[in-house]
Length: 410
Image 1 (cartoon, one colour):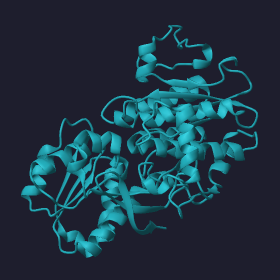
Image 2 (image 1 turned 135 degrees about the vertical axis):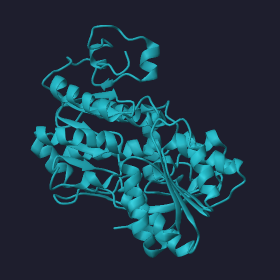
Image 3 (image 1 turned 120 degrees about the vertical axis):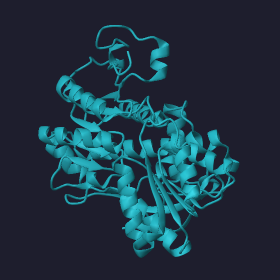
C-alpha cells in the first residue's frame, strides 16, 4: 500500500476501498490526508492541498517534515479553516526519487484536482515537477530546497522556493574559510544533484582566488551505501578543511569516519544535515564537537530561547498537534515555518483561491515568523521568489548548534 492516497475524511478508507491497518498508518509511507472528519470527502467547503514528499528511501530521516505539515493542517481545520474552507492535505511518498515525484504530482493535479502543490521535497524532485506545474499554470509553493532555480520567476512564474539558496549558504561558508582559514587546503564532497552543485558554486564564488586551494572535489550518488572511500581520499589528498554537502545519512557517515581516522579538520556540513536527532545523536555528540554549519532558525535546544514567546507558541503546537515529534529536531522547526508560510498565503487570499490569486499572495509576503532568528524575515515580491535570504553560521558545542558572528546574505 506504500504511496497510496489515504483520505482520513473518509474514515480511513483508501482510494481502492481497503481499510488501512494501524501499522500502515503508523509507518506513514502512505499518503496523509487531514481534514474535518465530519465533512464529506470533496465538499464545496474544502480546499485541496497536494504534496509529494519523502517518507521512505535514502532521505527518510526528513520524513518528520511532511508529518508535521499534516499536523499543522489539522490545527488550521480545528481552529476554523481558512477563508471559509477546511483543508484536505494529500501527501504522497516519492521516496526521494524525481520520477515518483512527477508521478505523484500528476496524480494529485489530474486525479484529485488540488489547488496547489506544497513543499515538494528536494531539488531534483521539485525540478522534475516544475515544468509540468507551470504548463498547467498551478502554484508550486515553497519548494523544500535551496536550489537557486526555484527563484526563476521569469521562466517559471508558478514556482517559488522557500529556504535560503544553496548558493547563499555556500557563499557564507566560503567567506568564512577565506577570512579565517586562509591558505588551508580544502576538500569538497557533495551529492551529485542540483543542491550540491549550487552550494559548491557559491562556495567557489566566495573563495575567489582561494578556490585554487581546493585539492580534491568528490561527489556521491543518492542511494550509495557509503561515502567512507571519499573521506579517505580527501584525507590522503592532504585536505585541511572539509566542506561536506551531503544529506543526513551521509553526513553521519562522514563525521563518524573522520573521527575514526583520528583526523580533526574544520568540518562544514550542509544546513539541512545539522540535525541533533538525525545526525548528531546517532553518531555520538562527542564525535561532532566543532562541526560547523549555517542556519536561519531558532534552535529549540538552545536555552537562550527558553523564554521566547515564539518558541513557546511552537512548543504549544508540538504538545497539542504533534506530540510524537522530537522537540530537539530542527526539521520540526523548518516544517512548522513552511506550513506557517503557506497559512499566511492562504489567509491573504481572502477566500479567493484561484491559482492566480494564490500565486499573487505567495509573492507578496512580508512578516516575521516565530521561529526565524531575529533580523530574518519572510519577504517575497513579484520579482523576488526567494522568501528567506539571510543566515547565521553555527558551531556544534557538544549540545547544540550555536550561532556565531553576524547574519550573512542579502
